[in-house]
Length: 453
Image 1: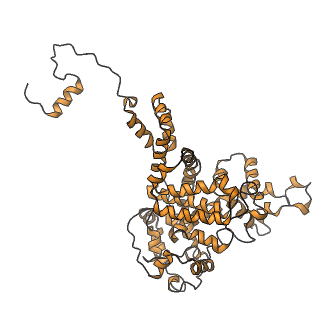
Image 2: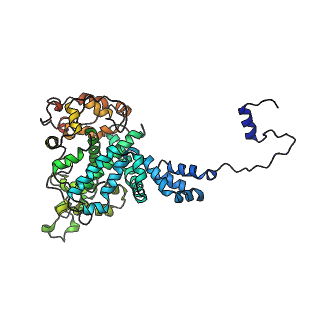
Image 3: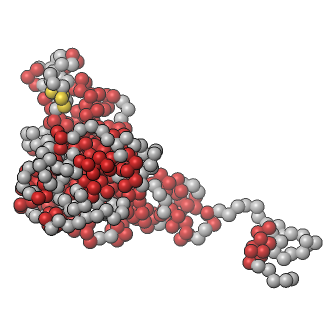
């Protein structure tokens, strides 16, 4: 037989001739297609560990008895690799949120414990890789991380993107979230949860009464991150406030002990002002119950989206508000996060705890836009601050931008929506660039600029 090319040999083998004479009877071959169950154990294990979501992993593990046996036999290894792949650059934040939200931590917390935890968290952010951390985690921690990510973080990521992109005159369907955009949102969610865990409370019996209460100290907690990442957290905070504002609209009458006839048997001297969700006659939202429910963090925020029964929603809001009383409530008019992002608290923090981010600003370091990456300043931030380092956040930035989620999005989305041009024009700061004299208080942008792109 003349020499055959490799391609010809493969074709002959595929059709089953393989050099056998046409006059000879073909051997009996199995008609069963190749099966994943026939793969070596190591390959099956790797397939499970590379599942893109927890739902996919569950479906694979239950697809066949063999895959289920592989999962049960090496669940620790599979889940560790799954968490490493799924959480990637947010794993240290996710783990810190999990640790600070645990019952033991919450019920035994003291101020020294809280600051020790924050210092350790900051150190781990800069010194440990996600792959190393994943391999160190106990199985129970890995399971809880995966559950929280699946049940709370992933649904809130989707809801946040829909909320913010609606204001940006865009939609997730026009440009599906990139991996970088998803990471930014999820990182902000986890860090918001950490802030709530160390500065907020779940109430009597769930959290010790000690938390980081002082306004300047709470600004210091935010200053663990560069300013553009603080703005990510503030974008999530705006989303939480707007969500609860809508919820308050739905349940305010049910909780209004002063006006609702269902409470006519209650002595008016015992009416709880904490449950008066709106101030009358102006009908503006009551900041104190709003602050109380915000302090609970993401679990309550996630729950309000999942409760279909109206009475259950009313009870969730009631319990979330009244549980944060006495030593567990904030100082009067503390306004949770909104108050501490004002310029005077930032100036005090800067004087007491001068950071590397402050130094970069004072040196007027250039921050040119390089690429869309979770670890680099996004195009919106670079554009607004004219390509120079800034460690200012809060009322140094237009409130409208935060409603758009401006630091969450990649360049192509910003350009397509028209927001980028708006940010470039508005980076003109009434009264001059605040970085030239950082102790001059800026004009609040919320009053200067309003409206959509």
